Image 1 (spheres, one colour):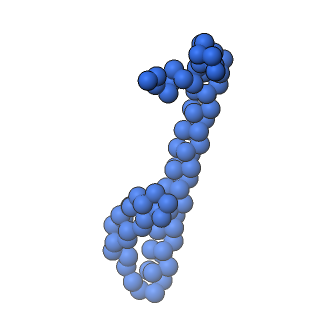
Image 2 (cartoon, one colour; image 1 turned 180 degrees about the horizontal axis):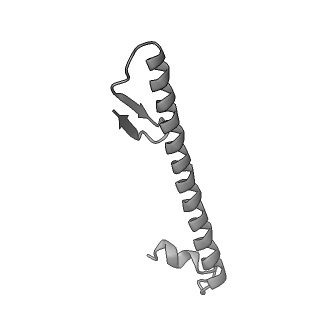
Image 3 (spheres, one colour; image 1 turned 120 degrees about the vertical axis):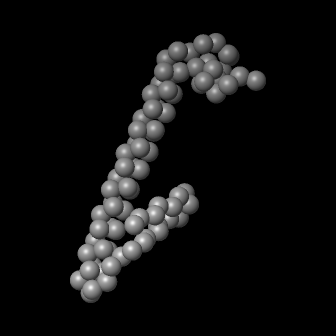
Length: 81
């Protein structure tokens, strides 16, 4: 069985189609870059949220010692001290 890279660069008859292969690789590269940008934005947003929660608690005389939050879509968890 052929791997995914070879099948993406071949047409329906099985002949090499380099243009389509390059287009698929570029599309995958763009998708990976968008996912990385989204992850970086998410990280920055959560960092700001934790900072605001800390400040809010300090206004009432409390100290945030430990916080754990989870992304419901991916299940990934982060822990902050």
